[in-house]
Length: 328
Image (cartoon, helix red, strand yellow):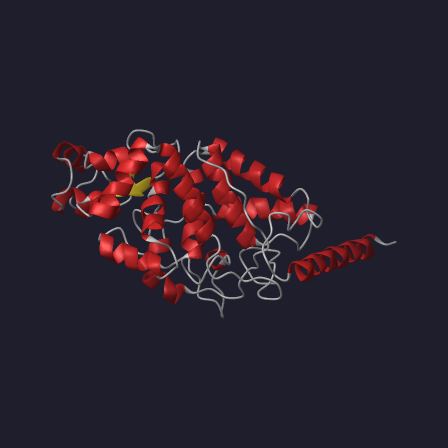
């Protein structure tokens, strides 16, 4: 048989197998979704994530954030990965997404998956797995990821500014933003210190001067010496891109030190410190996470699972993109 015919036949068989499995699942997610159609899917994603973090530790937090910014805008359907076209207004250029990173890592993983099992593994599932694998590699908890998400056919740039809460939000606004996504107040504390980053996820990663300038110069709920140290690298104007760790103590390790920092009024962002600012319920949860890190891990996992299921496309909805940057 000619090579091109062999390739076409392989693609048809893979697509048919995927369709059969989806029909059998009724469009529902399953940890074993790719067990028949692409048994190497999870190891390929994991190895890609590990290689990227070994090259640059910071990328682990970036992949976690990439998943968050995808899910909060029209659901976990990989719309954030789409580039600009005549018919698609990319989400990448919206202000909250301009410092989002990790697209190239997803591209590399997708390329390997397309070589192993063409047209089978969705970009949305890659994002979800990459977020989990990043947390695990950096010392955080693991969890089973249900799979079978499909990719969107369009992006939602207009929805980014209304769906991704900024680092200036107070606790009430943050809670409302998370509630709109079906996430609880406890999910807010374990997952998000600001819409642009993660709180539980803030135990790893960095933020830019422009994001924390207002907090270190204008707020009173911040340790004075901590604010002064940050003012040395982040002046009142200029140096917008200068980076500071979201967790000063262990910026590349997933642990509960972020919450210890809040007790000392050393949250980097205004919205970080809002999680420990006099609200009895929020303060109690933060203290619990400080004293019982296992509870933090448990709540973080539950929150990640809930977030990963926001407004999914499954079954015959959407598609499996062969290139995460464009529709088929």
